[in-house]
Length: 226
Image (cartoon, rainbow, N blue to C red; front, top):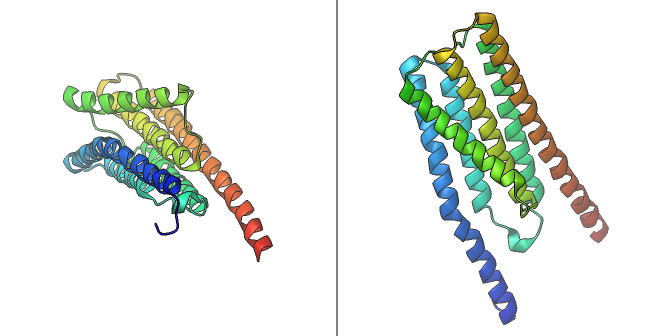
């Protein structure tokens, strides 16, 4: 802090405080997501289901990435870290999208069919899904959304979590309460799964393009300075 003016010191301190003030809120959200992941892990153990095991793994991965984005240093406000965390988030979304596509295919061909659940299990899955969906809608219609790269990356992670939970909810509801034909169940699971995969792929590609767009000007700037 040597050589800095009082205004710079105050401004830097305010940035640090502002960043860490968001940590308790993010911790609460992450604990909520981790509880849901553990819940799916318990379902995977009870039913021997690879689907719920995969859902738990994806939720753990997305939650861990979101926490990492919150704690990432901003390097004094510079943009040097922007491409790295945007690209890493994009690659994670695209990778998880491939995993989700494989699991949807396994469900359609019958090797990953859902097991019927009791009312308490379905209420827990529905409560998490509707909570996440409400949070996403609130953020989507907010006029004061932060359009910075870090905020966009975190928002897209929440969108991906919501899409996965919707697929999980529909799959479980059809198995537990559906009385239609197998063809109808397969068609519904396939259509919802494909829509979720397309949506998550779109999120990943948007982050990938934006990350590359941030990286190219920086390379040009560094090339001129050298």
